[in-house]
Length: 147
Length: 147
Length: 147
Image (cartoon, rainbow over all chains, first blue to last red; front, side, top):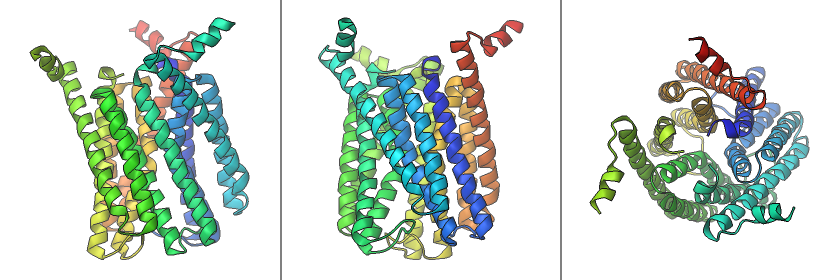
């Protein structure tokens, strides 16, 4: 597996690091607003920080699934680029949400668009692969023959 | 990797889409009951919807792990079928929980059964693979020789 | 894929089982303290148990990502051993947190150390693999030639 999927692995590891960073920022916000565990509510800024991180954590396995499938079945370079876009959108979302409730929206919509792209690419790759394997009909190969 | 694990990838992508759908239903429930972020409690129906989605999100990486291991080390077709069953159980669970607290139970127990099957298949596949690799003894090959 | 990454798969399946076990302990704590779903707060001991499980669930995909990348791109045996250490740290964290708020700290710091090791190994493996693929320069091969 190694070697040939290294770009996907690099993006995944960077995003894992980003998730750790978000969790660490929640910890910092706990200190700042004196919200002691196991409490998860307190000052409004802490509440927003906590919810921002929770939302990122919830979507993280969905993102990884879409990233690897799009990268393995469609195109690794394109999927990795979209993965970096997703990380940027999560950065915008997290810091926007910490600043204000409305601030999360730009990053959130960007996230949705990137995730929709990854899922669409993955679905296209899988349909092509299923046709190829079970019906011996590959759209990719047909297209390549045309040019 | 592509090609040969395409069924697992197809089920994973479908389940990723289902997770997004659940998150979207929570958003819709927020609108309906006017529970504005970052609040996560409000009307009882919203609370149930939110908890249903949270439970699905928590178990999602566990499901993916069990699905891919059962599919790679035991049998891809069987694991993919169980994956679809799991998605159906999550559908029952989510909508049952939204309707009433007791409504979640059928789907929840079905989930547990399917997850237990996937983990058991995965464990069987791994034990066979470990025996094969480190002791050069494969139960699978022995069984195939018998028939 | 099977065969050659069987140790990573074994550790992943064990950790998936551990996550299920934590979720089951939350259910048991619900019964003991009569906290009925969808409520997620009640007796202080239940609150700690619930937060402990939530934290484990949040970090689970991050752990899996780091484990598989470190195992595929650096060294499978070392990554699997660190994976078992991580599970032990999560065990300490969970049961420590259930006992008292301060009790979570030992396990928590151990978790961080193990996760940092996995991410570092994974990053080293990816950098080596990228150099090898795009610049045809492999540190691993150079080192092996020296000895």
